[in-house]
Length: 228
Image: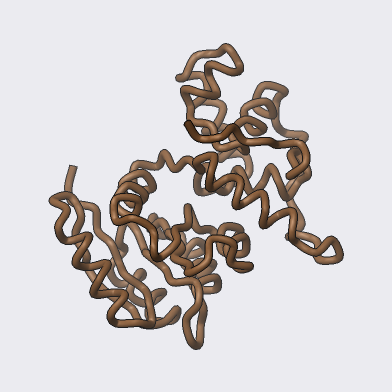
């Protein structure tokens, strides 16, 4: 497998330099470009087609949410990881709905950044319980008079696919879902693939957003396990 190509999108040059320093120390990651705003991020993504775009959520002109929406809708395989200063940034949920695969806090540990890039590239992005709780908290704080985007109906899913989607929304891994539902891990992967295909979703994070947007799960019905 070749190197993972990464595009850095942040309006602060020092932030980009810091991320470049961290990532270029990894033998399997290659920083292929930089962008100082959302519009440039979209243009550079189209030109370079990186595996991952590290996208600052707040930039002048076009912000990270709109840039993510354009990238996700372009048909390119690039995955977007949102970078935010605050883990409960009001725009994080918007960015995930727009097509981001994950989000990270800028002042988090360097190994979390590297691990997220590798995980998202592998297509096995999992919202860890701690991240899931933050996401649930954001949904709980959304004003009730502002409905989410109209979601697709879930009546095309089988009963077992609904079970898998409910457990997926709690941030469980394939192995954990298999153990809880007493089915094989390969079967879990098949069900998830069917869910993504039926609703034209990019990855697991989009499936989690679908579960909340449709009301299949709510902050009151999900209590993610504490991390060990």
